[in-house]
Length: 414
Image (tube, rainbow, N blue to C red; front, side, top):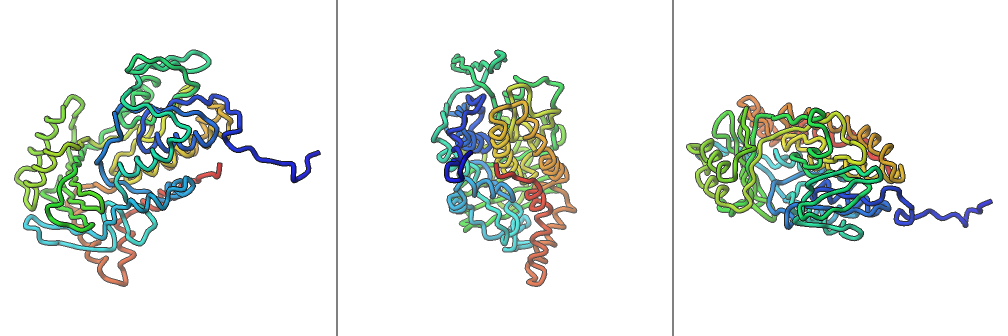
C-alpha cells in the first residue's frame, strides 16, 4: 500500500504519450500556441511554415477573456503587456480633418480603456509565442505541405521540398486558405462564406505625428479608413463593402489598383494614405470570409484556428479563438494520452458554442461594420462617453458583446 510520501506525480514529459509525433501546419498564433502546449504535455511537435520568416506588419489584434488566462498560464502576460500598442484614444473626422467626435474612454479597435484586454500587433504576439515555444519543438521554415496519405498507423506527409516523413497526427493551423483542410477533408464537408467586405492594411510613416492614437474617416456609406499610430508602428487600414468580390485570381498589383479605384476622390488624408499603403512592402489585402465545417477532424487530422472556423477580423475575437482552441486541443490530447479518437471530438465539443458566438458577432457587423446608421450611432456613443457619469457605460456599450463572448467558454485546468 502506498504511503503519502511515496506518491509522485509525473511531469508531462515523463508520461508515455501515444501518437506523440505531431506535425503542426502553420506558425501563426494558433500553430505556435499549440506547439508550446503539446511540447509541454509530452508530445514531440514539428511545425512547418511556408514563409521563410515570421511575417512582419499586419493588424492590431486583441486578447480577451479566456485567451488572457491561457497567456497567463504560459507565463507570458508581462511580455505581452509590454508589447501593447498603448493607444490612448480615438476620434472620427470629416473630410476637412475636423473632429466629429473624440474620446479617451474606448477605441473601436481595442475596446474600453478600463478593461484587462490587451491590444498588440499580430507580428509582436507571434514572435513572443515563437520564442517561448522553441524548446522541444522542431520548426521548419520555407517549406509547405503538398500531400497527405493515411498509412494505417500514421500519416505520410510529403513536403514541397520533396521530403517525405511520417507523423502520428497532423494538426492544421494554416489559416483561412488551409492546405490541410483541402487535402484531408471532402470538399462537400465545408464551405467558405463571404461577408461582402474587404480589408487592406499596411505600415506607413507617422506623417501626422500621432502619439498612440487612432483616427477614423468615412469617405462614404460603404467605406472607412483608420490611421493607427501605436507605440511601435503606424498602420493604415482601409475597409469597404464589396459584395461579390472575388480576389482568388488577383495578384498584388491588381489589389493595389482596386484599392486606389475604390478610394480615390475621398477627402481628409486619403490621397497620401493611398500612396503610402500601395507603396509599402508589407501590403496586405483580403476579403472577409468565414469557414464552416461539418467536423473539424477526420481520422488522424484535425484543424484549429481559422483553418477550421475562421470568423473574420470583423469578429474582433479571432486571436482569442486561436489561442483558446490551441490550448483546448493540446489539453484534450494530453487527457486522452494521445488517443485522438476521443480527444478530437471533445476538443470540438468544447469549442463549438464559443466559435458560433464569434461568427455570429462578425456577421452582425462586429468591429468593422459600415453603414450610415452605425456611423451615426458610434458618433453619439463617443460624444456621450465624455460625460463622466455615463462614460463607462458608453465605452462598454460601444464594445458590444465581445467581452461576454470572450469569457463564455470554460477553459479546463488540464
